[in-house]
Amino acid sequence: MHLFHGLSAFPITPSDPDGRVRQADLRSILRRIADAQVDSVGILGSTGGYAYLDPDQRRAVVEATMDEIGGRLPVIVGVGALRTDAAQSLARHAKASGADALLVAPISYTPLIEDEVFAHYAAIAEASDLPICIYNNPTTTHFTFSTGLLTRLATVPSIRAVKMPLPANGGFAGEIATLRAALPPGFSIGYSGDWGCAPAMLAGADAFYSVAAGTWPAEMLRLVRAAQSGDAHETARTDKAFEAMWALFKTSSSFRTVHRAANLLGLSDAQPPLPILPLPDTQDSALRQAMDALAAT
Image 1 (spheres, rainbow, N blue to C red):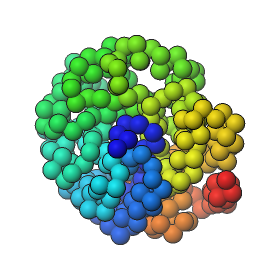
Image 2: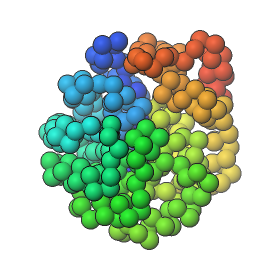
Image 3: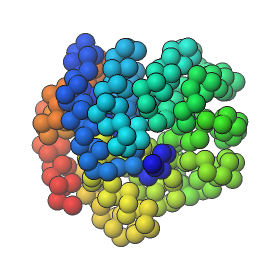
């Protein structure tokens, strides 16, 4: 098992307008990911729209996932919630369902302070002994983990990884070196923000948590494996094939883009949850061209 290492694929959660999971579509998407032999799958992350699903809908996603691909590859379940007790309940359910690990973001309405975030994570760790990856996503949570807080959280035995945002200055090597010096040996340092995959992995990140891999797992796996092997030429060649897709991710959001891609690929006709509007039809030509570029790699 490659938990918190290599490529972790994050699929959409296809659902109807009321949030009911489209089980057949979800299972088909999950099989596609598992067949590509990525290192893990992350369900109910930001791409999986967990913030737009109620607890029972989220539990249904976990159960369907474990039934479909449990044992084929590690499953990381997002259990972020506004209330600590809700996150604990979701963590216990993930454990009982056979999940391999948890992804936890500090969701909040009232801005959180570091002591509150530490207590929140410690309580979730008490609810389940599953390994935990810290989800540092200040764009959506409006909370940024300091190195000091990460070091403090790493003293909790089950907290073993962090999913970082892309550094503003592109300084992956320096940031990774700083984090490695502060965190225990073996603590996994990973990134998300797909257009930063190539430089992050070439700089020595342990893992990449990818939106694109939820829809194009084989293509993203080629990119990650090239970077892991240190092959800068092949990494650059493969990354260039994604160039048009990265442009769409940046301008229209990866969330909208992969939902529309799922429609065009015949994986699901599910739309993003309202109030998120789907990618306009006027973008279909650009998206098809971006997908054609991937198919040509």
